[in-house]
Length: 66
Image (cartoon, rainbow, N blue to C red):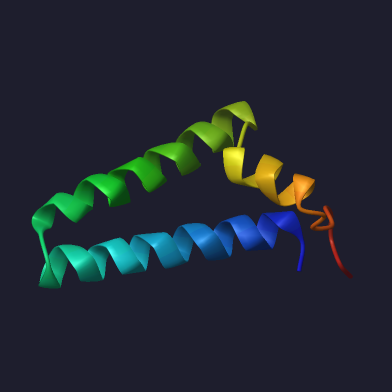
């Protein structure tokens, strides 16, 4: 799996988990959802994604796997 797909998988998972926590635990978890969304938005404009940097340092291959 490439870094791009892993970033999308992490972001989607974090959003769904935080929405579930907001529903069953505390509405304050929606702040985490907003943080993930804001990070995705800024990454689309700047190209800077902290998770991609961490994954690259962990040895995840970049680029397309086709």
